[in-house]
Length: 280
Image (cartoon, rainbow, N blue to C red; front, side, top):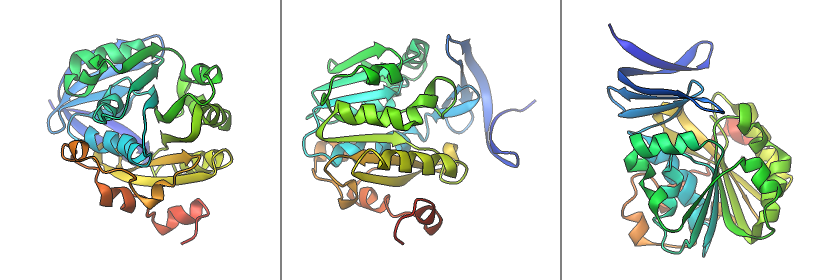
């Protein structure tokens, strides 16, 4: 008998992955976490029935989430990651030698423990001495965060369901603005440009009410429905102008991100430009 995992993006369309075996299923304090071995995509992490990552294509998402804002800043030293309990964002951040400290704020310790155990190629950077793991609610953390503490904030969250709802609100972006230095940057995952257009529009306009520079860009990730969106808020530097640094020691190891991808990712299709009220 064949076993398949399917995530429905709409009533008529979804992503299906053939399952070789189940690895574990855990009900944490906050959510249901499942890990499977798939036929074609390696191990699969699922939270509350939604695909979080697969070993085969997670690099595209994590590289674009991290390196686009990191290379948009001339000297990022202090970084905050909200969410990101799988370790992918931290792994990419640790490639940058200029980064001196990474605070990871993850609400669910179970996610970190499971990914350390079952996704060592993704979670290994948790052991980097620059990484400080805080098991806290990211929303509450930002309410009490010191002003002008971070160069970059990366929000690597689940969809706006359950404890992640507040991460997509204007109040949260206002708290992030205060916690960023005068030339700071925030970067968030902002959903599917095909199936979550309303979410993307809300994130873009809410962030635009707080930050003087707001940009949205796209990256291809098969198990996220083809394309995924990211939205950047910046106090000073415009990521649309391209990378401000060139670090061959980082770029030579990457599978997806490069200078041309950085620039091209901000060129949006017409329907999204219209939705976000951008000039065509």
